[in-house]
Amino acid sequence: MESELTLMAVHAHPDDEVISTGGVFARYADEGIRTVLVTCTNGEQGDGPGGVKPGEPGHDPADVSRRRLGELRESVAHLAIDHVELLGYPDSGMVGWDANADTGVFANVPVEQAAARLADLMERYRPQVVVTYDENGNYGHPDHIQAHRIAIAAAESTGIPRKFYHTAIPRAGIEEMMEYLRSTGADMTDFELPDDFGTPDEEITTVVDVSAYFERKVKALEAHASQGENIFLLRMPDDAQRRALGTESFVRRFSAVPSPDHEDDLFAGLR
Image (cartoon, rainbow, N blue to C red; front, side):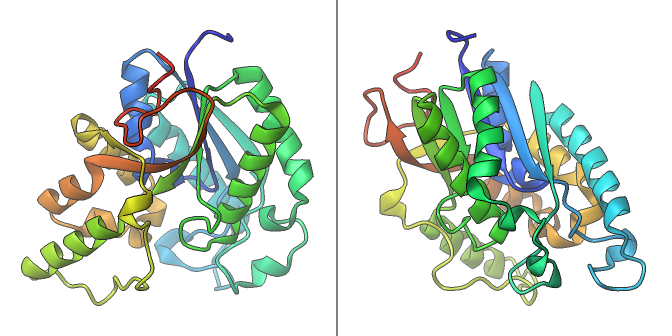
């Protein structure tokens, strides 16, 4: 198993696997690289039937969890992910939600405890490449931040990953996409982002072309139907979707092998 090339992505919720890593999962699976998805929570704080929100009448966290894990299985099949590992922690919800106060939710679990479980998975799969979110969880979600923390801790304690990446959304790409959507007359009233959203382009080290896997990424996103109201990409025109989903960008946090400053392959230097 030591010599088998392996990609491991550490994500917070069912559906997080698609937008930033669905293409690399599908591409590397097609190339014969083993792919491992670690999903840290069961997504209990997602929407219930009819879009009902946590805390509203009719929202059943256990039922939401069952639905979302079923959707995850369908998404994984579209992306040809080899192994799915569920840590099973309760979803913490967005910043400021009531769930934040629950000591049992993922964001409140001691980092060393959750990191030890992830370290066990790294020992089992021996991934040369590990991907997760940046220090801010890409947009400040408590569970994304916790996923980052435990992935860093597990990587450092095991010394197994040869390359470690943060997912990234290029800031210039966001600006271009917003301008493009406005030019098409798309309704942008429900899609406002803070000015500092995204990653400064000069920090991005790796851009992987996954355009050949566009249709599979869309199908994987559509598999998460219970959360469709929150997936703005699915409401965009086809050509805008292709612009948004055709590449996946990353910031290389560290590499134990010689790597170019700018690369188009997470496994550059490892093949």
